[in-house]
View 1 (cartoon, helix red, strand yellow):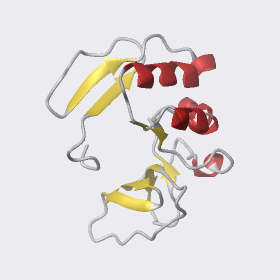
View 2 (cartoon, rainbow, N blue to C red):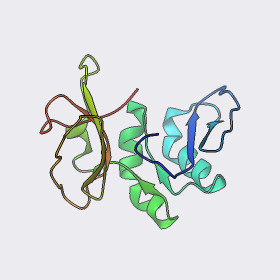
View 3 (cartoon, rainbow, N blue to C red):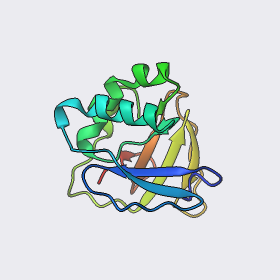
View 4 (spheres, rainbow, N blue to C red):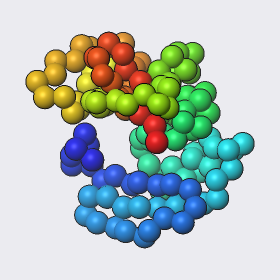
Length: 143
């Protein structure tokens, strides 16, 4: 939430989700989880809810969304992930504990949890929410 001040954030998950709505954020259900149609479920949800940017947080959402990013873009929805051809290089070992977090949009670090961090500018196609212990070893943040 700190990375997106001034934006309304819709937090969503599969199954039952508490119906909470505040001035700055809300919780919503994505419906029943079907891992075979993740991209379809999320695209339909984004269109229905007028979402303009999506950040996948489940590991099983990463590859389907990265491969579908162009389709999402045709509907004006930005997928915050690295390009599909390199996304697997940013997946982390689930046992790995990450100390810091950073959000990149078009290669610019718009938020970092590390005090006094001076993140470097990356490729303009570089997007995502990352965890890291060393700034040169970014891993996608998943739950």
